[in-house]
Image (cartoon, rainbow, N blue to C red; front, top):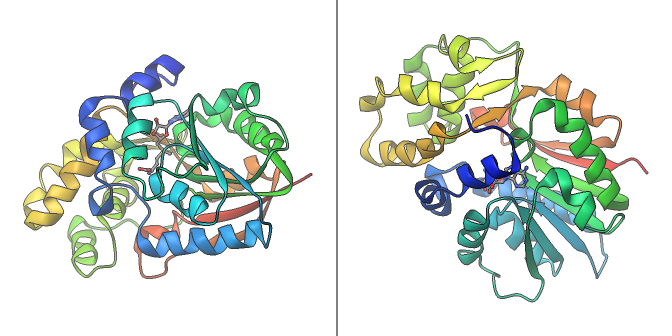
Length: 287
Ligand SMILES: C[S@@+](CC[C@H](N)C(=O)[O-])C[C@H]1O[C@@H](n2cnc3c(N)ncnc32)[C@H](O)[C@@H]1O
């Protein structure tokens, strides 16, 4: 894994093959699906109420989230550490030419140095926090809370680990996927957390989820996926060589954020198995 340093992150996220794989979007990526975007939209409307002028900060280049805020006329600033990925994702946006579409290269852990405090109505993120080392979550939440206006909100999808979920057989996971009860992203998460592979791929203590371990093991069951799903899987797993995710239980996540935010709502797409432990949260700042 690349170290969580500014230079390390910029380099690993900016690799050409990774930029290409992430920019495809859709079913072969970890991008939010349609139903999840509907939850984001519902929460976004709650957050901006009927305010006419709003400002949104997006943690990363995620085009779907930036387009959502722009659709509601919000001045939208995306902050991402990788110039290449940010530009490539900006290029595929629906509202890329909007005057409200703004973006900056920077580290989320340094945003208090280049963005004004108390200036955002909403902060949007998609699995962004899982890119930050667990011991820095407190620092990140503190920065986010300071950037938000009074009564501001964070809306973010967060990967969590459910310690009481039963382990599954590989075939069971493939069967659920073929029945439409999971996405490729969800299928990989199921393997990595909730099969015998979990012992190797998820370090509960360090909270490190190793995509690389899963990718190596799944090579042996790839022939169970159809052609389209296999192509999606191959695209999703491109980043596995370079990144691990930092994933805690929901309880540990709540414990960290409680000091700075209230949990207002939690959105789950019931029919999708992974969504039950990768919900979208609506968090209101404590100010
Ligand atoms: C937001 S997350 C995942 C998003 C989502 N699943 C998707 O595909 O849109 C990934 C992004 O975060 C950026 N990133 C990771 N760590 C960062 C940090 N400390 N500061 C700023 N950007 C960071 C990466 O460059 C990458 O573009």
